[in-house]
Amino acid sequence: MSLVKFYTKEDLLSLVKKRKGEVKLGEGLTTVSNWGQLKKATQRFVLVGIPEDIGVRANYGNPGTSEAWKAALQVFCNIQQNELTHVENILVLGEVNCETEMKSASRLSSKEEHYTEKLGKLVEQVDKKVAGTIQMVLEAGKFPIVIGGGHNNCYGNLKGAHSAFGKPINCLNFDAHTDFRALEHRHSGNGFSYAFEEGYLDRYFTFGLHRNYTSQFVFDRLKLHHDRIRFSVFEDIAITEKITYSEAIKEAEAFICGATFGLELDLDAIEDMGSSAMTPGGFTMNDARRFISYFSKKEQCVYFHICEGAPGLGNFPAQVGKTISFLISDVIA
Image (cartoon, rainbow, N blue to C red):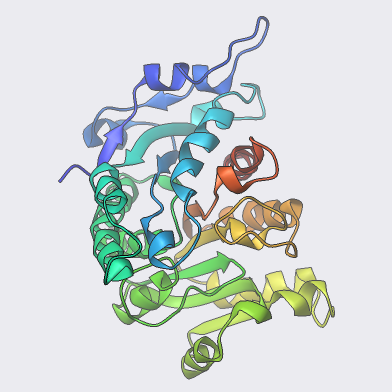
């Protein structure tokens, strides 16, 4: 099973739009052709793409998250290479090889019997590839920045981290949804519940949960595990102001950051962002940037995943790519 498609320097240079008197980031980014080279590389941050939207479709969502990785990389390769963008700390690994699963998904009709269950089986195959990739990157002593796909991929991130560290890890999720739905077929709405059930996820915190899009079933499940699962409500922070943004940050930090943790950001949480479940009301982009910049610098943070971006659903062509590029830059700064 081929886990990833390793990118070459030529792949990155093909994305660069050169301009006289400037040096773009893509001209200085490092690539490798195998796992041995990754272990020897000096760069700390490793970019990994997941070009799939099978999990979103299996959750009755809008497709398009498969395009986020390429859109982000296109923009990222064209930001300026200067003393503040730290090209020396970044390596582009490539993309998780989802080609076979995406082709299989494209041959399925939404009208056929057990359509979502069949997609769920394909999600399970992607799960294995994501988990194997994240394990390899972490075991190489690197910090993976994972871009693209649906939030189903949090499962693979957590499973891979569990394998690398030999223990369950915590997770902090900047999201409008918990993605803690029922243990049915695999999809983008139950990655965390599966990871929790299978022992890969220890403590879990959802930051900015939207009250209108969380079922009572999910609330009841969360209450059963109050010692290990917490959340803050978006409306309590941004609308009624029962709690300030800073207080909510401290609450999440106290619950999650005392042990090894992964950091997840669903672009659905950002207002008017092109995503699989685009929302007219949510946190601002700068809210998200401050959140990620703060928590990614914590000593116990071991990976960052940006998901659910759908460039075709954005307000302007480069919206999603530019947003992800900003978030990557905030992590490596």
